[in-house]
Amino acid sequence: MKILAVAALTAAVIMSACADPAANKPKAQTTAPITNVAANTNAAAKPAGESSSVLAGFKATGSELAVTPENSKVEFTGSKISGKHDGGFKTFKGIIDLVGEKPESSLVLIEIDVASVFTDADGLTKHLQTGDFFETEKFPKASFVSTKIEPPPGGNGNYNVTGDLEIRSVKKSVTFPATIRVTPEVVSVIAEFSINRKDFSIAYPGKADDLIRDDVIIRLELKPARVK
Image 1 (cartoon, rainbow, N blue to C red):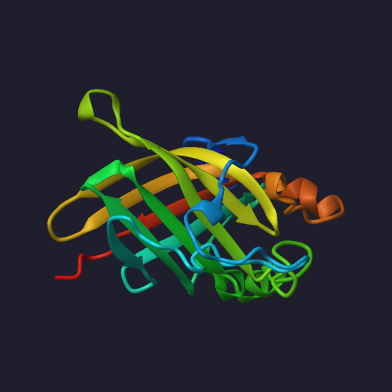
Image 2 (tube, one colour):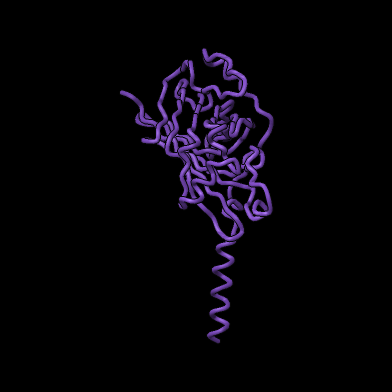
């Protein structure tokens, strides 16, 4: 009986370690990009081989709220068949252009310093910065620019946020659910969804990649306070 109990406990631990954390999360819909950032900014066209800032020259048409690491979080969870790792980015900046106090009329822009990536394992953090994953020296910035924010039917439930996500100079339009709240004190955007890393050319070459799951959970917690 003891042997059976130990075997059952061991099997339970293995099953728990191998479970896919993205399996029960909403999966972002991914299509071709649609952003025309130049229409919202005075930014010059980017030189060949260089990344331009989505925030450069941006002019808010409503209330401009600053997104910073002091009031927000950009995190992720990746996994392989033997377990998972949590991480995020320490350095990023962004703007919520709140128009008419209505999320559906507003705009969100985020720019991430990819080299500021961190995880729960130092070796993994360093590996993510290499050409096997983010290749931060060549692609130092990632960005997100919303293109449409749809309110929930009947005013209840999650908004659907669509925007262009750019990683490793690969830009895709993604749509995901988000809880958005607008109060006199703060604007809050909370989202948790998964994306396929290979859609953004993040593929560790070789057999090791077969052990890494394609879907990565993205967690956004944006809570910029209003300036009074």
